[in-house]
Length: 154
Image 1: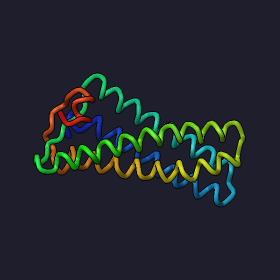
Image 2 (image 1 turned 60 degrees about the horizontal axis):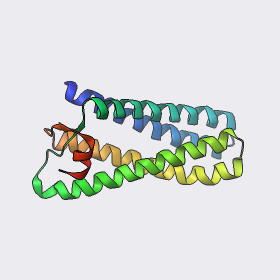
Image 3 (image 1 turned 180 degrees about the horizontal axis):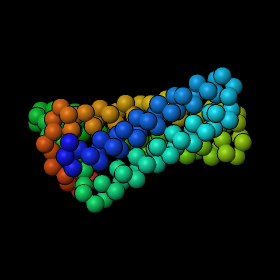
Image 4 (image 1 turned 90 degrees about the vertical axis):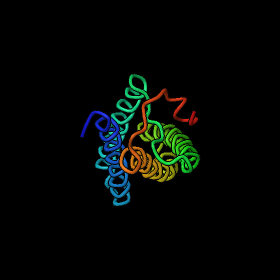
């Protein structure tokens, strides 16, 4: 594995770890294990923060990877990428809100937000892995460009 794959692979791994921990945390709270739930969800948040630090650092200092696949699939990829970015942004806001409600011990609201947040987080992780798979496994070879050019497909 060369440098082209290192940061995207590591960051994608952390978002997958975060989603797995969210699933474990959900299972724990269903079983009534509040303290274990809290610890696992904090670790899920830490994994998500590590993902964000790696991803944003790479985006700022290196750029994002452009589409390297066939031109006839590029438009579909761009729409999918924008969907993923919007979903990830919503998931981050919901995640911060859900964590805040939990720490403030507003459990009724935390419970309502948590269910929705977890589902959005799972879809974000799945679509993130799909973007990674498309860019680095199925159609590698795209170059790094400024983020706005990658998102808009210019």
